[in-house]
Length: 411
Image 1 (cartoon, rainbow, N blue to C red):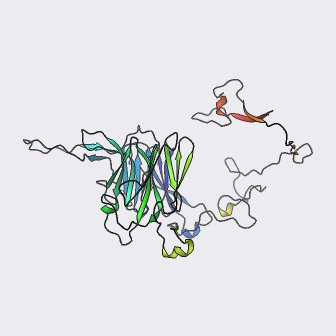
Image 2 (cartoon, helix red, strand yellow; image 1 turned 90 degrees about the vertical axis):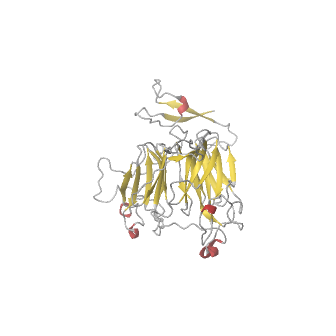
């Protein structure tokens, strides 16, 4: 099973994290000028087994140098493009006990695990980068000041290239964080500059200063941070009945969507200026007026071409196009034997004379009908006879009898 997936900034690669502890990378080997109108020539690039448990988060560096992964084996692995990996797992306590007066040989500093173990109640540990690639942010962290203090859940932030020590530790409260969602937009920095202790204060001055935002999701709380302030800009609690699982920002960076295992999605809208002023490039001012326009890093044309005039929905490569409802089974010479995919034209169910059945007119004052779900196909009371399952076909593990359900109109 695939737990997590991520596209590279150039859209020519994607990375998968799976149940069998592997990280797989695939690459489109087709030339850029031939990718238009095709599904690409995807090749398996490499498989890595740096984790000893489920891989629950993968993320490509926006600048194209690193690939970071996180698993339930309590490790984070930033991998450089030249196959050099750095495993992050343990750290020394912030406060160490003073050595004894008669101690001649220094003792090894005590250390603790930095991340929650596999008992965490979540399938995901979605780590991510700030959009400028300056920081890697990892969820599901544990912070402990000393051996005598209680551990606290946190989110670790690492400065680029500096994996030995986190640049910041964001405390998460009573539950661990599960996902980091970077805002795709850049925002203008405040005129007062970065606060002492903020992420931007720890970085060297930039010729083009900017402010990045990111959301941190725990199972019940949403935090929105930026790189110029120590405390979160926004906090929302208990939006859902079950734990949060994932989230995404809109392309303009003004709306945040979060999902939960209770089956619902929440949309959080921020008013203009509430998160700050978005930075605008000079060439985009005439187009949009305000705000940053998203430009894909890849210059390749879109993979799926737009439909031509009077052309139906098509599928597959250009040389194998087929219109919906077309009687032809495919190009001449195309294999149509066992296992070949065939498109079946829709059939109109008609009456006795072959014409479409007339639809009965319902009087406007007719009584309202109640729809009930009637279970069929398990009248004998087999192992799948469960009225609460509705019309869902259940295939869990072994093949079981499919359930059929029909809607019966009862007056």
